[in-house]
Each structure stands twice: as C-alpha cells, then as structure tokens.
Length: 602
Image 1 (cartoon, rainbow, N blue to C red):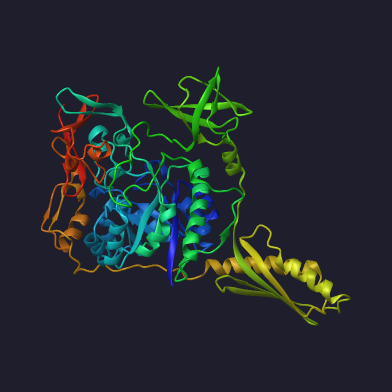
Image 2 (tube, rainbow, N blue to C red):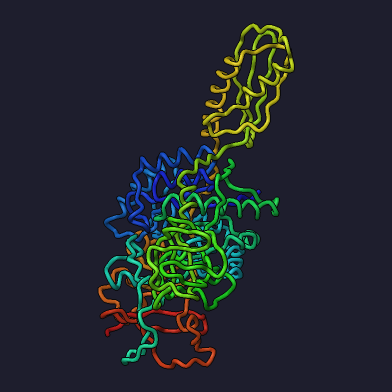
C-alpha cells in the first residue's frame, strides 16, 4: 500500500518535537553546515535526539545538506553526511550532485533547489538514484501530474508557507546585491524589499512597492487532488518559524491530510500515533502574508502582496465609524485586548495593538490612519497564541491490552496498532477472587493506564477473572510491558530506498547552464558521465552580474499589474525595477509566460 507523508520544518529540537507531537510523519532539519538556512543549524547530537524521538512513532528525519559545495568543502560535507547517517537520519536533502557521488548509505532526495520543473528532469533524477524529487513551487496541478507520471522517484511538493518568487536554486538576486547567496544558505531576501517600476529613462510607473513579494501558499483544500496526481509527501515551509507556528499549522494539515486519506483507502499515512490538539487549528492565525494557491490552477494575476512583505494575518472586517480614540467595525468581530491588528495606510502596512474592547467599541494603541472604510486584519491573536503556548498535546499509539490470570500467575500482553506484540508475566500463587466481576473491572482499569508513555490503551480484555490479582502486581507488569513495547518499536525495520546511480541515465540536455551551478569536480564528473558535453562556468562564482539573469520566474510583473503583453498593454518598451543605485531590466518570455530579472547599470 502506498504511504503518504506530512513533512514539517524543524528549526531545532523543540520545534521538531512539536512537529512530531502534533502529527507530522517526518521533519526536515539542518545540520551544523551546508543547509539552505544558515540560521537553523543543529549539532549531530541534537539531530540524534530528534531521530530517537521521531522513530518512536515510525516518523522520519530528513537532514538538509542542500547548498552548493566548493571543492575544498567536499571532505567536510561528506564527513557531516556520514555523521548524520550514523545517528539514524532517514534521508539527506541535497542540491549538489557531488553528494550523489559519495556512495552514501542513505536515501537521497533532490532538493527544491535542484529546480525540478519538467517530467524529463524528474525522470532523470529517479534514474540517477534519487529516491525522491522535491518540486518547484510554481508548478500547476497539470504539471505536477505530468511529473509524477514520468518518474519512479517519490514526488514531494510544498503545500504551505512562503514562496520563493524565483525558481528555487536559480535565483541570484541576493548574491548580486550583497554577496549573500541563497544557494549557500544566506539569502538576504531582496525580493521582499520595496522597488520602483520604471522605464529606465526617468519615468516611474510604480513607486516603492514590494513588486516581487508574493503571498504565502495554502493548498490545504487541494490535498486530495495532489494525492490523485501521485504526490507522496506534503511539505510545510518554515524552518525559521517559531514553535507556535509549527503546532498550529502541523495540526491543521494533519487534519486535512487525514480527511483526504479517508476517501482513498488505497493510501495510508507514513507514521503511526494520533494527536488530539487541545485547540482548534487555524493557519490564518499564524504568520501569513495572505493565502494563495499561487499557480496551482495555472498562471494568473493576484498572487503578489505589493503593500507589505510582513504577516497580514486574518481579515477581521471594515471600519464603520471612528469615535475619538476608538473605532467600531461595520460588523461585530471577536477582537480582544492584547490582539495585534494591521491595516494599509498611505500604501504601507501599519500595525498597532488593541488596548480595550467594550460593547463593540475598540480602543487601539494608536488611531492614526484608522478611518471609515479601512480594512482591519488581525496578525496576532492573543488568546489563541496563549492557548498554543500552554498546549500540552501528546501523540499516542493505540494499543490493545490482554490480561491472563491462572492459579499459577498472571501474564500481560500488549499489541500495538502495527501488530508489535510484547508480553510480561509473573509466576505467583493467586487466590480465588471474592467478586470476579469487580476483579475483572479492576484488572482492565489497571492494564489500560498508560501514564506519560507514548501509548494509549483503547481496549483491555481479561481472561481468568476468577483469580484475584493485586493492583500493585499489575502496575509493575504494566510499566515493564510498556518499556518492552517501546524498545521493540525502536527495533522495527525501517523502509529506505537507497538506490544505485544508473550510469546509462542521460541528462535531459547536453549542456549544463551557468544557473545550474556546477561548482566542484565531483558534480562535474556526475554530469559528464550522464551525457553532458558542455558545462558553463557557474553563475554562483560570477564576479559581475551585468547582463546576467539573476532571477528566472513563473511570476510576471506585467501580468500582475494588468499589462500582459498578450493583452494589449499600455506600457510598451523596456521595464526596470530600481532601488537606490540598483537597477535590473525585466525580460518577458510570453511563449512560456515567464519573466527574467537581468542585472544592468543604472
């Protein structure tokens, strides 16, 4: 039976444990170096703790080694990879093909930084020994379906969180501006900054807007379609997000994935254990720049967030009336003191806190900019976040208990939901029970207690109710039984797809372009062995980006502002984005409906 995975981000041990507790089937986490989020590194010892915790539930740990590597880093990268494998990580997520050449005894996943956008590329990576390909975020459902049909590898796609506006692994905007490279784990996110749109000759069409900042993804309502397309893993973005974000979003997607799986009995989730959150999950109440399905239904306008790259949160309503230092909404809303709200004023997002609410009258910390007609958003729900912080949700594995009592002793048998069975017994002379029914109830009650273990006894049966068993005896057997069951679960065989590299697999092109970044000798040998004739010098090593494409994107600024070249636009000629002394020319590929951002002098 095919398994389906909910994959959650983990900044550290705390967030990893939270992701597992609230229902993730796997987490992805960075090591000390070579991860695409430098600020989310962890020691091997910390990752070992995560592995031990996740494996209790059959959940997996994927370690990220998804930056480009220089020749003098290959030995260190290989050493770190082997240290992570030694502590039990289930897969490595990689961008650089050098890691494919290191004969690592672990499952390899092709990172989203590899920029898998076509069936041919996905097919090649599967043939080259990658167990999984992680798709570019900008693909439509039809494109995802085509990729799934083309490859033997599992297919993973992002379903929630921030979107890179450029094709992953093919963006050099940060590198061209600051030297900080996204392909080296240090993106400065210039796409979230305000830019001017100009014609390069002094005329400004749009002034100081976040022209490249797109809304966050939310495909929670489309998971069934992705399952039917062939996707095996649903990925939540957010390795720099806080623990409350992890709790809320993972719990919400656990519910959504389970609902989709319930309608597809030929599929099952990848791990075991159930979580029952003590709050009602709602992703809109955690960090969000506004929800978007991006280009899931095809390329379209309305995916950008020009006014702000910050969290907007959930829409509350429109201001109906202002009364001195307070305001009222057109319709009542459940705002409370301590909530954070925001609104657009003068083209910029402005935020403030709520000091008091009484009879529909809302008193903010600042009233400036709040006028009738303004839309109010709540980007911090004080009561909800208080619930998240106080949440003590546990994930438990369903178990059946069976007690067998005879004149010569008692046996306690535990069997979990995967059929793992342990039994513990004591040889002791037992007396006849004065009340067999009361004795049976007491035995069931004792056998069903699970305390702070990872188990939950859903059913307890008793055989031999005529023999009295002291509660203390059952309690001792119970503790021993759960310890034995936990140990047995740790020793369960784990499924891994450690695949060989097929030397006959041909790369989809005879040329590896500059933006594909071959930066070391092992990667170069990999491509040449798979039929590549020409390898361009890597753009990652470029000294100048003048005339070079620093971002390639399915997002089109012309389309976003209603000036698509296919639809009789008013803005003819070249367009540029500018910020201070920086200028980039925009090139539009109407045949592919894509945009390029090209470095140029101002």
